[in-house]
Structure formats: C-alpha cells, structure tokens
Amino acid sequence: MSGKVEEIKSVEDFENKVMKSSMPVVVDFWAEWCMPCRMMGPVLEELAREMENVKFYKVNIDEIIELARRFGVMSIPTFIVFKDGREAGRIVGAMPKQLFRQQLEKMLSEQ
Image (cartoon, rainbow, N blue to C red; front, side, top):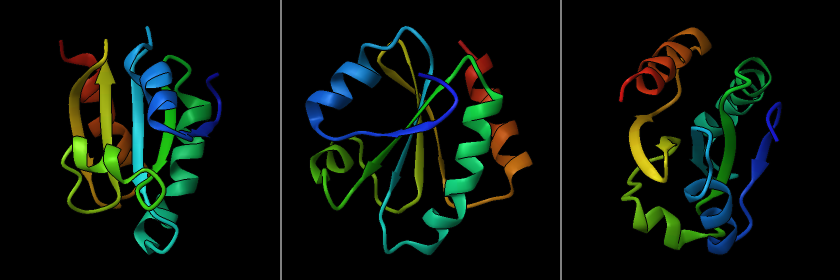
C-alpha cells in the first residue's frame, strides 16, 4: 500500500513485498540507534505520501542482518531502489528532502 512506509518483518516478507512488486520500491536499510537514519524517517514518510507510484519499505539491519549482507549495505542509512526485482540504484546517507527526491526520481526514470 502506498502512502506510508512499511516495516519488512522477514526475508520472506522482503521477497514477497520487494522482489515480486510490480511497482518500483525504495527500501530504507536503517537501525534504531542511527541518528541520520532517524532524521530520514520523516522524509521517507512524506515521500511515501507524495509519490503514489512507488512503494516504501524499511529494513532494520539489526533485526534482519542477512538482507543487509545480501545487498552489501556497509553504512546506514542506505536506500536501495528496486525495479522488477532488481536493484536500480542506491543512495547512501542522510540529505535534505529535495535532493533525496531528485536522486530518487532520476533512478526511477532510468531504464
């Protein structure tokens, strides 16, 4: 469902919601203790409401470490864009909403 950022609960949940999605997906790899991650939370919530053609999910790397390993997440926050079950790009680090949105839209428009 668009309009909000949903938490991924397991690897199986990730497979179903992200890898099998017909819509582009942005996955936020984050952790509770990460201040830049927490700063980006409201930005993601706003974008989830504004960008109706994209799904937004969060993966807590402390709870599902195997997904962080699988995608080579070395620092957080890391945002990975998936299209048709494949990585289409990634953004690492916190930044202002406008800059983040511009980078996202560029990745989403590329084939």
